[in-house]
Amino acid sequence: MIKATNLTKQYDNGFVAVDSLNLQVNKGDIYGFLGPNGAGKTTTIRMLNGLIEPSDGSVTIEGKEVKYENASVSKLIGVLPESHGYYNWMTGREYLKLFAELYGVDKKRVKSRVEEVLEWVGMAGKADILIGQYSRGMKQRIGIAKTIVHEPSIIFLDEPTLGLDPQGQKDIQSIITRLNQEQNVTVFITSHLLKEISEICNRIAIVKQGKLLEEGYLDELIKGYRLVLKNENPTLEDIFFSLTTDEVGGVSDVQSNKKGNKGTCIIP
Ligand SMILES: Nc1ncnc2c1ncn2[C@@H]1O[C@H](COP(=O)(O)OP(=O)(O)OP(=O)(O)O)[C@@H](O)[C@H]1O
Image (cartoon, rainbow, N blue to C red):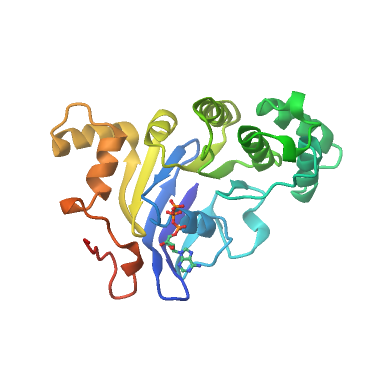
């Protein structure tokens, strides 16, 4: 359903943020895309969405090639970026109506679709309040409503629970799970909250310095790592740290990821 082949991004300054990544997200997955800060997650999402051009490699979504700034797949996908602006002077309902129209929802259907998504994210009672007066959790709910307003089959959520309190995190997780189970929406999600990922995702990928370190079904990975980690019940956190922590407890210098010097770790 989403297939990335040898996906690579070298920025203009020579830095290789994503290096020959091969990924496959299947229909119905909640796919957790994990990695330390600077691992290349946002860069990857932007290439998967056609927002930036890969230096090499290709992406297909439902068999259609994703081309840079080409709107052909935009109807199939919904995107909630990590940092996104809201129109604080609009009410939640006005904002969703605007995006329903922009995304080409049938004019006759806009009103009812906006009401549907407001219900979905539990914001029907707050829809006439200005977005500027919403809490962060309410803004994220409206952000998710915007992401699904045109009924995409795949949604990309970059850190959707960042900065939310535990209840806010739980609410967003429950919306994501219900969208997946009840509306058959495939979800590609990044988060630094490994517990959250292990609770909602069936498949995961772990990247570091732009390279794929591991990909697979979470339950199979956990089984596979029992032996590797000599632990009967390894958690996703155990697997993540075993793969991403540098030996000697050092911090890897991701800025050294230049061509010809890929993946080098500098231990301070
Ligand atoms: N336009 C750019 N030019 C050069 N380097 C960039 C550019 N954009 C991002 N980078 C670098 O690419 C690397 C990957 O960045 P990216 O934002 O994709 O990582 P991330 O995994 O999403 O990080 P985080 O978890 O902190 O959000 C980082 O080292 C970043 O500094």
